[in-house]
Image 1 (tube, rainbow, N blue to C red):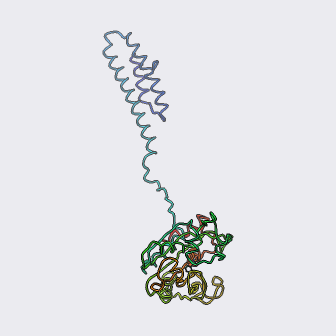
Image 2: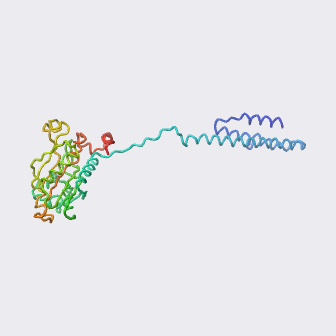
Image 3: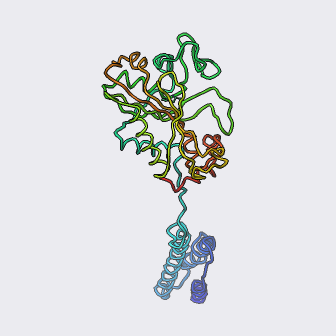
Length: 339
Ligand code: PHE
């Protein structure tokens, strides 16, 4: 019996499991139903009574030693396997991909900041509009081509419900709802039935401005546009106004800025003219003031409107309008460092 106990003790001493399965095997081999220590205990009955005390103590020590060994082995395997799941301080932190602002949002924010300095506030309106706000209140004659299906997306006919073709509709809504004087800029999406190409799209963004007060003159308009152009494109920028026509302004003009790329000398971007057209403007036609219940004898105003895609093209050197709408991550990434 003593010999057996010694042998098992040696086995316990040399126990060096390399995985949890081996620990379990060892447990069965020692303490299972037919385990070596379990059998020792059943053999204990046959031990002569004078040896019982000594042998009993030895077997108990052996049993407790085996239990301790098995438990401690189990714990050490548990700890080592969970170590990998907890904190590894040498691991590199997961890189968080930052997004970027869309160039159209960047330009919109920049324009808003510039016009805010001049006391303009923001005004927004619906994209789905009626004929009155997009055309009639702005003095568009009934036969004007912009009212044609070719140019305008109609949703319903008579009464006409349509997608706004410019944000001048917001100016009408502002005249309806706000007290004079009015000084607002109206950014937003507009829709025109045009074939999609590098230079045109059926959806684009505008910012339009409206200022109505007593004694507003064309000189105020020109000074405002000069200030705006220099803030946006740099302080050496020049502007020029060319006579034009819009149903809602009289006189009307189109404004060019001096080409930044060639400094006005002429290049392929400005088609060798040294100038780039960026907006339409003019004095609000008295008829429009009257249509919107504003006394044109007391009040006058100016308005202007520009396409944001075009401004962003000039400012960021974007050559194809379609890029703004495709949301290609490679294009958007270019604007990561702009705020
Ligand atoms: N609404 C005009 C357009 O969409 C732009 C404009 C606004 C022109 C205000 C003059 C005055 O083209």
